[in-house]
Image: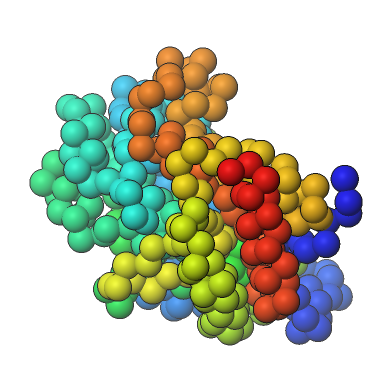
Amino acid sequence: MPELSIPMSSAELDETDIEAVLGVLRSGRLALGAKSVEFERLMAEYIGVKHAIAVSSGTAALHLLVRALNIGAGDEVIVPSFTFAASANAVLYERATPVFAEIETNTYNLDPDDVRRKITPRTKAIMVVDVFGHPAEWDTLQQIADEHGLVLIDDSCEALGAEYRGRKIGSFGAAGAFAFYPNKQMTTGEGGIIVTPDDHIAEMCRSLRNQGRGQMSAWLEHENLGYNYRLDEMSAALGVSQLQRIETFLAKRAAVAQMYTERLADFDWVRTPVIQPHVRMSWFVYVVTLADGLDRDVVIERMEARGVPARGYFFPVHLQPYVRRMLDTHDGQLPLTENIAGRTIALPFHNNLTRAQVEQVVECLAAAVNDVA
């Protein structure tokens, strides 16, 4: 197999990022310092909420939210299956049951009609995922939650900077969670953050991320059973530096997405992402949908044989081997999710992908499709 000529993703780092991290190293204060506080303040301001709590990953953020909301054994949380496994894992960690709902045919976000059908007396919350950076239908989902007395959790890990009807994602529901892995819109290496307007949720999450210590506790006094989910100072400093350029990053990603969309417009065997007019998309990945009948996995193999990477996005969570064992889920349970998941391909995508590279990717994709058609 030839060496891959284009990276699947790439973080944008510059000298200001490097100096920010070096500044922390020179200071000697590597944890629980001023950079974490600054990162939280800036992120809360950017999203437009009262609180932000920096943690070690987006998964940690989701787990702490489930725990802080007192969701546990006997409770059900409605969650999409067309998502990264962490969305459901955060529910399983607390011995609650994820109930998988179908997705919309256009944006691949949660289908509010199926959410309604999946509500039972045991339902306590809805885990909403803004898939690929496209906001879910928050007005409708909030209405459903209000009607049934349910909590909304926003898994916004893929959607930093996205907006729904002019309002930032992360400001909906009880709380939201962002992640900063290197393929995200901005990065802290690893890392995540919780955002919420709720004082109690914020207080609980701050305690739980720091081994259960209270804000006013004596040294080594623990009020709650907690975790070591803290974000280190080097990562926080990188987050502060990256957040200063987030709008530039988002604009670059939108420009790359537009190049892909324009170049793919003439092909009838592929559907480019659908963006609703009332949202601001925050491009996490660029995912296309192949026509029925095309073998997605073979297309990916043929692309990689030509030196261009691609990935299947997403593998349905309800069909993951461990979920099948734990919840007795099965093929055919979510027909639309399973159909879409078998036809979606993430193409190489990052801030600085050039027009020539986009052309190379599209030509490779077209050749691969021609091979299997």
